[in-house]
Structure formats: C-alpha cells, structure tokens
Image (cartoon, rainbow, N blue to C red; front, side, top):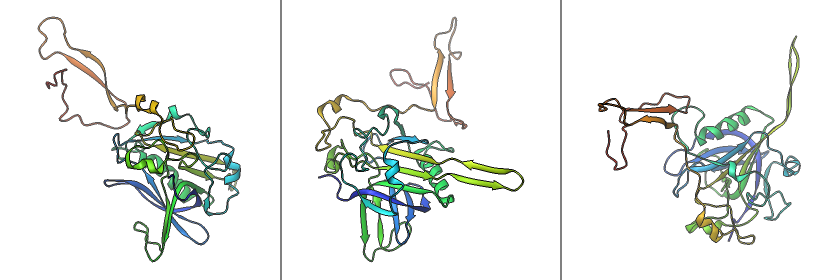
Length: 288
C-alpha cells in the first residue's frame, strides 16, 4: 500500500519535547509563515530489538540539497520515484548502511542516547533564527477542530514515519514502498558574526542529516513493492555494545585460589557506573 501522503515538511523549530513513555517519540513544533506542525520522531521500536538504528552525518552532502533549499516553507508532496527529492535508504546513495548503530532512547548521563543526539541539533535550530528543518515522512491532518495533544495548536497537523519505510514485518508491511523513506535534515546557513574591535568571523553553512531505521527491517527489498526479500532472514542486526566490558580475568591463580580470582572491567562511558548488585556468573548461570 505504501505511505498515503509522502513528502517533506520545511519549517522553523520553536519548541520540542523529549520522547518518553511506552511508545516514545521526540516531538518538535515547527511553523511556516501561516501554519503550525508537529513532527513525531520515533526513538524506540515497538518490536524487538527496541533500540533504533541511527546515523547522524554532521557534514551531509547530496545532490538533493540544492533543490531542497529552494522549497517554500510548509509541506511539499513528493513523488516516490528517483530524482524527485524522495529518500530511499537502499537506492538513493544517501549513506553507508553499515555505519548505522543501535542506540537506546534513555541512557543515564549526558549526550549518550537517541533523545539527546537529536535534541542537540533541534535546540541549535530553535536558537538559530535562520535555521530550517526538513522532515521527510507521511503527513497527517489538518485535523479540523482538534488541538495538537503536545503543543496545543489547532488544528492538529504534522509529519510522522520519519524513518526507513520498507522491509517491514508484521502489520507494518502495509507501509512498505520504495523512494518513500523518512529522515531529518537540518540546514544552518552561513553567518557572519561581527565583534567590535575583533573583526568578522564567518560560520560556514552546514547540513546535518539524521537517518533512522528499525532493527527488524533489512537492506534487501523488492524494487517495486519495498517488501523484504528472502535473504533478509539470514541477516542478523548489529549488537549493542555495553559500556561496561570485561577486558581480563584471572580465574585459576596458582596455589590456594579461593577469594583471589580477579576480573578486570573497563567503563567505556564518561560517567560513573554503580556496580551495586552486579555479580559474575559462570556458564551454568551460578553467581559469585
């Protein structure tokens, strides 16, 4: 069936809400010259594994950018075909899928979960009056006489499915299609900053891309329907690496060894980790 109203929304970010709850979405309030919109960005999957795959490119370059910057603010419908500004993670030469990594949405500590990765650029876009956000996905609304449940504007109106939209499983296969993937682009135009007595500093133009996919999806799809191909069943998603890892162990020291065995851990995060309640288990799951 594919998405019903695929396109791109261009607007100015003025507010945001961190994704939380059972089905969390990072919410952004966008405006154009006359209309309010909400973009709902998945930060957790309803299917296992729940962590989304993500890739952020902070110096994104692609031929579609030249056409995007000339778009009027607001929603623009896009044809799901090549060379029409539509996104396709598999066919569009947007990025290397092998660089995507799984990331939870709510890890304790700063700048280490998906909410915070997205939030850094959204907050920058809110603070920069010249910045624009381009959200690719499926439009909903306008919903007559219905207020937006997060930001309260009326009528409700916005974009969702801001992620890969092919190779789905279960009830989501009806959303499959080619050249209709979602994504998030941030455009920060160049700025000349003049400081009295110092001179002029030029901040260069920057495009930032955020690409999201579910681990239940795969990278081999039918060129017409976007449905997953049989070889998908043999592909295993990347594993999440724990911030705490075992790097060495002395399990059988010489002599009477009870109480002098050691396990050496490394903390790969910048934060203190409380190990209270942790224990070492053998292959039979016997704790020590």
